[in-house]
Every structure is written in C-alpha cells, then in structure tokens.
Length: 236
Image (cartoon, rainbow, N blue to C red; front, side):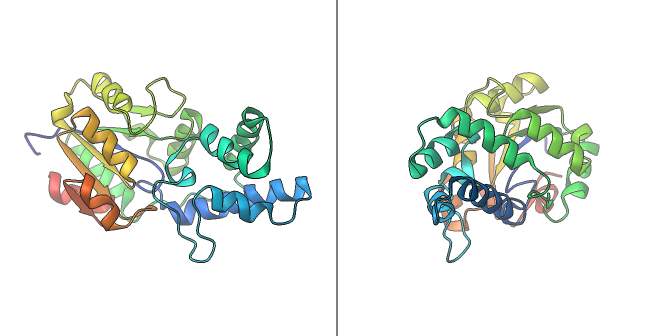
C-alpha cells in the first residue's frame, strides 16, 4: 500500500458509472416526458441544450448542469428554459423521473468491481460523493453490488455542501479518520477535481469515463487515467 494515501473518495456518475451510457437516455426520457405533458413541441431540445447537452454530438459540457450539478440546479435551468415558475416542484418531479428504472440502466465502468475490491483488500477507506441525492446514490451502489465496500456515502442533500466546495471531502475524512493529505479524490469533471483541491486532497485524479475530455481535466488533476480500473496500478 502507498504509505502516503490511505483513503479514496469517488464521484459516482462518470466515475463509477459510465456517464453517457447511464445518463443520456435518462435525460432524454425526462425531457421528452415534460414535452409531452406541456404540449410544447421543441421543449425537450431546449431543456437538453439548457443543461449543456450538444444534440448533434451527444456530448455534455463538463461544466453544464446535467454533467455536474444537483437536481434542484438542473430544475432551475429547465424551469427557466420552459418558462415554468415553480422550480421546486419541477425538482421533485425530476428526482422521480431520474430514478425511474424504465429510463435508467446503470452502466458500471470497465473493471469497477475488481478495482474497488483490490483497494478494499489493501485497507484503503473508500467513499462516494455525488451531486445526486444520497438515497439515489445508496440505491445505485446497492444495484452495483458495491455498497458494502463504501465507508462513506454522501449526496447533495447530505449536509456537506456542494461541489466544488471542500465539505464532502472534509466529511469523508472525518468519517474515516484520515487527513485530506492522505486522501485521493477521483472524479470525471473539473468540479470534482476542484473539490479535491479546495479540501487539500493529497492526490487528485481525473478519469475519462464521464463528460470531460483530458484537456478539461489536466489543469486540475495530478494525473488523468482512462478509468477507475487503472487506479490500483498507481496506488498499490
């Protein structure tokens, strides 16, 4: 084991889950659902573009609402695009739509379970920090069969603040009894990596399984890896 690093905090979507394979269908499903209910032809396109999705390429802006913000923030963006006044009610509706398995099929990144088990066996403390709700995060980890490997799970509603602030990393460090300098932050967006930096994480790792390209992550990361499967190779 690395004598310097003893804990690893992961983002979820785009890091543990392949972002495009898991979320593109979900966001389209939700936007099309709202368009049908409103009778406003073209609303789905406006919503997806407001959230940072390029409908020509299918790519997401790494700093867009759909790629890195919580559901209430997405709801405010979509409410403005739709001309809807009650963003709070829309957020409740979106949370239900985003969690619907009809539109949501979890796609774990390549080598996920093997990588996490290797780190767990080496006594790394593992955790997850996501801008999804804590309940959705716990449900996803259960579905993936990796919840028992995690000593800490927090969402945007868990009381630790939002990315890129340091609160989620600080909460993880307190929970597992390790200082930030002994902690590795792993994420797929600049928001994740800036969170690690703001908390003083000892190693900040970008992965290319999410919305951001290597050029987006390099300015904020100590190292950029193809995916989580490559993490044991640098830590063990």
